[in-house]
Image (cartoon, rainbow, N blue to C red; front, side, top):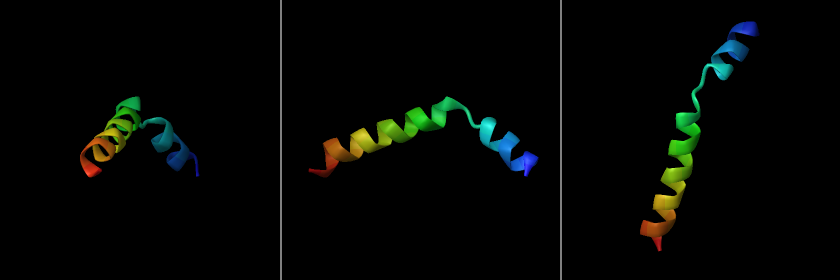
Length: 31
């Protein structure tokens, strides 16, 4: 599926950074 591959490559790094920040905030706020 070339379309899926293109869509996957089209994902910006901001989502990855946002996910990491989200995890860190959950660790800080959780416990």
